[in-house]
Image (tube, rainbow, N blue to C red; front, top):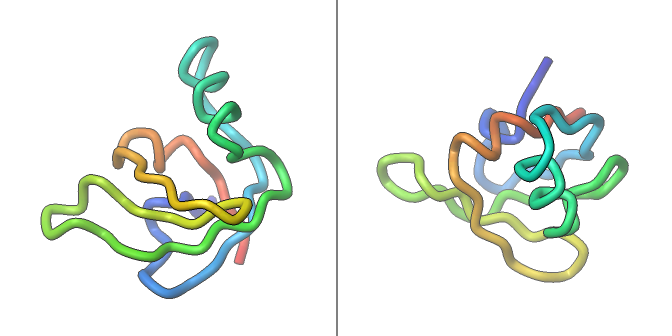
Length: 74
């Protein structure tokens, strides 16, 4: 299983599955990170938190903990 956190800068991945429960999962889905969405990793902060991605035509910053809940495929 590969998570969004493991995707390197400049690479794209497709969301396969969201882990997590209740409000956390709902918040991730509300940001546009749903099954089948294409995600491009733009930047990662020096300490790895946050991760800046492009999804559905807009930029989004995610915490490492949230990125670990998003299972992706290359």
